[in-house]
Image (cartoon, rainbow, N blue to C red):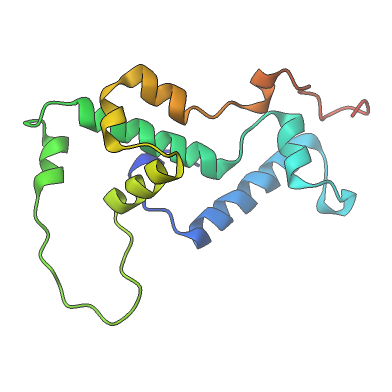
Length: 145
């Protein structure tokens, strides 16, 4: 479901739909239904997965770091320098660009784009640990939960 999400500008509606889809799969995997009235956070903790929005942000920032470390003559870096033609748009909220989304992610982490040049530092900043790696139990398919 996250394949290629590094280049998306994900809208809230799309994020909501992906979250709903993920939770349906996790509940099905555990043999639980919504009628069991188990909170999403509890299901995610039992299965051992992090929330999908944080995983999307992690992948997007990892791809940003990869692009920033590439030479400027590489085709993927040349796309950064392409000037876009300003098209007259209606009076509404401006479209969210990938660059603006990256800046919002970095501001949320209280960091700057220059951190992308140091791979180890960027990885430690953006890494989202799955609950399994925190030593929480993985069992959700038997009666011991």
